[in-house]
Image 1 (cartoon, rainbow, N blue to C red):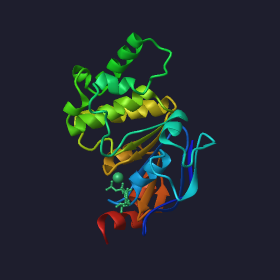
Image 2 (cartoon, rainbow, N blue to C red):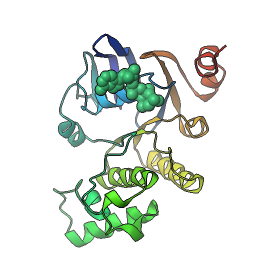
Image 3 (cartoon, rainbow, N blue to C red):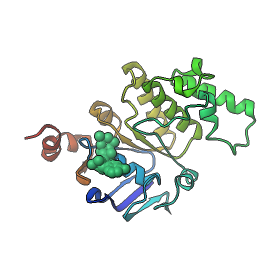
Length: 234
Ligand SMILES: Nc1ncnc2c1ncn2[C@@H]1O[C@H](COP(=O)(O)OP(=O)(O)OP(=O)(O)O)[C@@H](O)[C@H]1O
Ligand SMILES: [Mg+2]
Protein backbone atom coordinates (compact mmCIF):
# COMPACT_ATOMS: atom_id res chain seq x y z
CA UNK A 1 0.00 0.00 0.00
CA UNK A 2 1.20 3.46 -0.96
CA UNK A 3 0.16 6.22 1.41
CA UNK A 4 0.66 9.97 0.98
CA UNK A 5 -0.11 12.36 3.84
CA UNK A 6 0.08 16.16 3.65
CA UNK A 7 2.50 16.25 0.71
CA UNK A 8 3.59 19.70 -0.50
CA UNK A 9 6.17 20.77 -3.06
CA UNK A 10 7.06 24.34 -4.02
CA UNK A 11 9.15 25.69 -6.86
CA UNK A 12 10.03 29.20 -5.70
CA UNK A 13 6.69 30.99 -5.32
CA UNK A 14 4.73 28.27 -7.11
CA UNK A 15 2.99 25.66 -4.97
CA UNK A 16 2.97 22.69 -7.36
CA UNK A 17 1.58 20.22 -4.78
CA UNK A 18 -0.43 21.58 -1.88
CA UNK A 19 -1.10 19.50 1.25
CA UNK A 20 -2.10 16.41 -0.71
CA UNK A 21 -3.20 13.14 0.89
CA UNK A 22 -4.35 9.90 -0.75
CA UNK A 23 -3.67 6.20 -0.67
CA UNK A 24 -3.40 3.37 -3.16
CA UNK A 25 -4.26 0.06 -1.47
CA UNK A 26 -2.54 -3.14 -2.59
CA UNK A 27 -3.99 -4.85 -5.66
CA UNK A 28 -5.58 -1.68 -6.98
CA UNK A 29 -5.05 0.94 -9.64
CA UNK A 30 -5.29 4.52 -8.47
CA UNK A 31 -5.92 6.87 -11.38
CA UNK A 32 -4.70 10.45 -11.15
CA UNK A 33 -6.09 13.08 -13.50
CA UNK A 34 -6.01 16.85 -13.80
CA UNK A 35 -5.39 19.56 -16.38
CA UNK A 36 -1.86 20.38 -17.64
CA UNK A 37 0.29 21.73 -14.83
CA UNK A 38 -2.05 20.40 -12.09
CA UNK A 39 0.91 18.78 -10.29
CA UNK A 40 0.53 15.10 -11.24
CA UNK A 41 4.09 14.46 -12.40
CA UNK A 42 5.46 16.41 -9.44
CA UNK A 43 3.59 14.04 -7.09
CA UNK A 44 5.20 11.07 -8.87
CA UNK A 45 8.62 12.72 -8.70
CA UNK A 46 8.23 13.23 -4.93
CA UNK A 47 7.09 9.63 -4.38
CA UNK A 48 9.97 8.16 -6.38
CA UNK A 49 12.55 10.41 -4.70
CA UNK A 50 13.47 12.45 -7.76
CA UNK A 51 12.29 15.59 -5.95
CA UNK A 52 12.49 16.14 -2.24
CA UNK A 53 9.14 17.15 -0.77
CA UNK A 54 8.73 20.24 1.43
CA UNK A 55 6.18 18.70 3.79
CA UNK A 56 4.39 15.40 4.17
CA UNK A 57 5.00 11.74 4.68
CA UNK A 58 5.12 8.98 2.07
CA UNK A 59 4.95 5.35 3.15
CA UNK A 60 5.23 2.23 1.03
CA UNK A 61 3.98 -1.01 2.58
CA UNK A 62 4.33 0.61 6.00
CA UNK A 63 7.92 1.85 5.43
CA UNK A 64 8.63 5.56 5.47
CA UNK A 65 10.23 6.44 2.12
CA UNK A 66 9.90 10.23 2.41
CA UNK A 67 12.88 11.99 0.81
CA UNK A 68 14.92 8.80 0.49
CA UNK A 69 17.06 8.47 -2.65
CA UNK A 70 15.45 7.10 -5.85
CA UNK A 71 17.80 4.13 -5.56
CA UNK A 72 16.64 3.29 -2.00
CA UNK A 73 12.99 3.73 -2.93
CA UNK A 74 13.40 1.37 -5.90
CA UNK A 75 14.91 -1.20 -3.52
CA UNK A 76 11.83 -0.83 -1.32
CA UNK A 77 9.83 -2.13 -4.31
CA UNK A 78 8.78 0.92 -6.27
CA UNK A 79 9.20 1.23 -10.04
CA UNK A 80 8.17 4.01 -12.37
CA UNK A 81 8.07 5.22 -15.94
CA UNK A 82 8.49 8.82 -17.09
CA UNK A 83 6.19 11.14 -19.02
CA UNK A 84 9.17 11.99 -21.24
CA UNK A 85 10.99 8.64 -21.55
CA UNK A 86 14.39 8.29 -19.90
CA UNK A 87 15.83 5.22 -21.55
CA UNK A 88 19.56 4.42 -21.53
CA UNK A 89 20.12 5.64 -25.05
CA UNK A 90 23.59 4.14 -25.67
CA UNK A 91 22.56 0.71 -24.44
CA UNK A 92 20.68 -1.95 -26.39
CA UNK A 93 17.08 -2.74 -25.49
CA UNK A 94 18.15 -5.99 -23.83
CA UNK A 95 20.79 -4.10 -21.81
CA UNK A 96 18.19 -1.54 -20.73
CA UNK A 97 16.17 -4.38 -19.20
CA UNK A 98 19.19 -6.20 -17.73
CA UNK A 99 20.32 -2.99 -15.99
CA UNK A 100 17.47 -3.43 -13.49
CA UNK A 101 18.49 -6.92 -12.33
CA UNK A 102 22.25 -6.66 -11.76
CA UNK A 103 22.01 -8.47 -8.41
CA UNK A 104 19.76 -11.29 -9.65
CA UNK A 105 20.66 -14.89 -8.72
CA UNK A 106 19.53 -16.06 -12.19
CA UNK A 107 22.11 -16.89 -14.89
CA UNK A 108 22.81 -14.44 -17.73
CA UNK A 109 21.11 -16.81 -20.18
CA UNK A 110 17.97 -16.98 -18.04
CA UNK A 111 17.88 -13.19 -17.67
CA UNK A 112 18.29 -12.65 -21.42
CA UNK A 113 15.49 -15.11 -22.07
CA UNK A 114 13.24 -13.30 -19.59
CA UNK A 115 14.12 -9.89 -21.08
CA UNK A 116 13.41 -11.15 -24.59
CA UNK A 117 10.03 -12.49 -23.57
CA UNK A 118 9.09 -9.17 -21.92
CA UNK A 119 10.22 -7.24 -25.02
CA UNK A 120 8.05 -9.60 -27.05
CA UNK A 121 5.03 -8.58 -24.95
CA UNK A 122 5.49 -4.94 -25.97
CA UNK A 123 6.35 -5.93 -29.56
CA UNK A 124 9.97 -4.76 -29.38
CA UNK A 125 11.78 -8.11 -29.45
CA UNK A 126 12.95 -7.75 -33.06
CA UNK A 127 14.83 -4.60 -32.03
CA UNK A 128 16.35 -6.13 -28.90
CA UNK A 129 19.96 -5.67 -30.02
CA UNK A 130 19.42 -2.13 -31.34
CA UNK A 131 20.46 0.92 -29.34
CA UNK A 132 17.60 2.53 -27.42
CA UNK A 133 18.36 5.88 -29.07
CA UNK A 134 17.18 4.38 -32.37
CA UNK A 135 13.63 3.94 -31.05
CA UNK A 136 10.71 6.24 -31.83
CA UNK A 137 9.08 8.22 -29.00
CA UNK A 138 6.25 5.69 -28.61
CA UNK A 139 8.69 2.77 -28.68
CA UNK A 140 10.74 4.42 -25.91
CA UNK A 141 7.60 4.54 -23.75
CA UNK A 142 7.16 0.82 -24.37
CA UNK A 143 10.80 0.15 -23.51
CA UNK A 144 10.35 1.95 -20.18
CA UNK A 145 7.32 -0.19 -19.46
CA UNK A 146 9.28 -3.33 -20.35
CA UNK A 147 12.14 -2.19 -18.08
CA UNK A 148 9.79 -1.78 -15.13
CA UNK A 149 8.25 -5.21 -15.85
CA UNK A 150 11.74 -6.76 -15.82
CA UNK A 151 12.51 -5.09 -12.49
CA UNK A 152 9.17 -6.46 -11.19
CA UNK A 153 8.44 -4.05 -8.29
CA UNK A 154 5.32 -4.40 -6.14
CA UNK A 155 4.23 -0.81 -6.75
CA UNK A 156 4.40 0.81 -10.17
CA UNK A 157 3.94 4.48 -11.08
CA UNK A 158 3.04 5.10 -14.72
CA UNK A 159 3.13 8.67 -16.09
CA UNK A 160 1.17 8.86 -19.35
CA UNK A 161 1.99 5.29 -20.44
CA UNK A 162 -0.37 5.38 -23.43
CA UNK A 163 0.72 8.71 -24.94
CA UNK A 164 2.05 8.09 -28.43
CA UNK A 165 1.32 4.35 -28.32
CA UNK A 166 -0.92 2.94 -31.09
CA UNK A 167 -4.45 1.80 -30.11
CA UNK A 168 -3.84 -1.92 -30.76
CA UNK A 169 -0.85 -1.97 -28.45
CA UNK A 170 -2.64 0.21 -25.86
CA UNK A 171 -5.27 -2.52 -25.63
CA UNK A 172 -2.57 -5.14 -25.03
CA UNK A 173 -0.92 -2.92 -22.38
CA UNK A 174 -4.23 -2.32 -20.60
CA UNK A 175 -4.84 -6.08 -20.42
CA UNK A 176 -1.30 -6.61 -19.15
CA UNK A 177 -1.74 -3.97 -16.42
CA UNK A 178 -4.99 -5.65 -15.38
CA UNK A 179 -3.28 -9.03 -15.11
CA UNK A 180 -0.44 -7.52 -13.04
CA UNK A 181 -3.01 -6.10 -10.61
CA UNK A 182 -4.62 -9.53 -10.34
CA UNK A 183 -1.13 -10.87 -9.55
CA UNK A 184 -0.84 -8.45 -6.58
CA UNK A 185 0.69 -5.25 -7.98
CA UNK A 186 -0.36 -1.73 -7.04
CA UNK A 187 -0.44 1.04 -9.66
CA UNK A 188 -0.56 4.80 -9.66
CA UNK A 189 -1.61 5.77 -13.18
CA UNK A 190 -1.51 9.28 -14.62
CA UNK A 191 -3.22 9.74 -17.97
CA UNK A 192 -5.07 12.33 -19.99
CA UNK A 193 -6.77 9.42 -21.78
CA UNK A 194 -9.93 9.30 -19.70
CA UNK A 195 -11.21 6.17 -21.49
CA UNK A 196 -8.29 4.09 -20.20
CA UNK A 197 -8.36 5.83 -16.79
CA UNK A 198 -12.06 5.01 -16.41
CA UNK A 199 -11.54 1.44 -17.62
CA UNK A 200 -8.57 0.69 -15.36
CA UNK A 201 -8.94 2.71 -12.15
CA UNK A 202 -10.50 1.37 -8.98
CA UNK A 203 -10.29 4.82 -7.47
CA UNK A 204 -9.48 8.24 -8.95
CA UNK A 205 -7.90 11.37 -7.50
CA UNK A 206 -8.39 14.65 -9.36
CA UNK A 207 -5.81 17.41 -8.95
CA UNK A 208 -6.15 21.09 -9.76
CA UNK A 209 -3.41 23.62 -8.96
CA UNK A 210 -1.73 21.06 -6.72
CA UNK A 211 -4.82 20.37 -4.63
CA UNK A 212 -7.15 17.40 -4.59
CA UNK A 213 -10.51 18.68 -5.86
CA UNK A 214 -12.25 15.31 -6.02
CA UNK A 215 -11.74 11.67 -5.19
CA UNK A 216 -13.91 8.61 -5.69
CA UNK A 217 -14.82 5.74 -7.96
CA UNK A 218 -15.29 6.15 -11.71
CA UNK A 219 -18.99 7.01 -11.49
CA UNK A 220 -18.38 9.62 -8.76
CA UNK A 221 -15.71 11.30 -10.84
CA UNK A 222 -17.61 11.20 -14.15
CA UNK A 223 -20.52 13.01 -12.52
CA UNK A 224 -18.58 15.43 -10.31
CA UNK A 225 -19.43 19.04 -11.31
CA UNK A 226 -16.03 20.38 -10.15
CA UNK A 227 -14.23 17.87 -12.33
CA UNK A 228 -16.41 18.67 -15.33
CA UNK A 229 -15.77 22.38 -14.78
CA UNK A 230 -12.00 21.92 -14.37
CA UNK A 231 -11.82 19.90 -17.59
CA UNK A 232 -14.40 21.53 -19.80
CA UNK A 233 -14.97 24.96 -18.25
CA UNK A 234 -18.40 26.08 -17.15
N1 LIG B 1 11.48 21.22 -11.92
C1 LIG B 1 10.58 22.22 -11.90
N2 LIG B 1 10.93 23.51 -11.70
C2 LIG B 1 10.01 24.51 -11.66
N3 LIG B 1 8.69 24.30 -11.81
C3 LIG B 1 8.27 23.06 -12.02
C4 LIG B 1 9.17 21.95 -12.07
N4 LIG B 1 8.46 20.81 -12.29
C5 LIG B 1 7.18 21.20 -12.38
N5 LIG B 1 7.06 22.53 -12.20
C6 LIG B 1 5.81 23.30 -12.21
O1 LIG B 1 4.91 22.66 -11.33
C7 LIG B 1 3.59 22.67 -11.86
C8 LIG B 1 3.09 21.25 -11.96
O2 LIG B 1 3.82 20.58 -12.99
P1 LIG B 1 3.60 19.04 -13.29
O3 LIG B 1 4.64 18.65 -14.29
O4 LIG B 1 3.57 18.29 -12.03
O5 LIG B 1 2.14 19.04 -13.94
P2 LIG B 1 1.30 17.84 -14.57
O6 LIG B 1 0.01 17.78 -13.86
O7 LIG B 1 2.13 16.62 -14.63
O8 LIG B 1 1.02 18.42 -16.05
P3 LIG B 1 0.93 17.65 -17.48
O9 LIG B 1 -0.44 17.05 -17.54
O10 LIG B 1 1.10 18.74 -18.46
O11 LIG B 1 2.02 16.65 -17.53
C9 LIG B 1 3.67 23.40 -13.19
O12 LIG B 1 3.27 24.73 -12.99
C10 LIG B 1 5.14 23.31 -13.56
O13 LIG B 1 5.54 24.43 -14.30
MG1 LIG C 1 2.91 15.50 -16.14
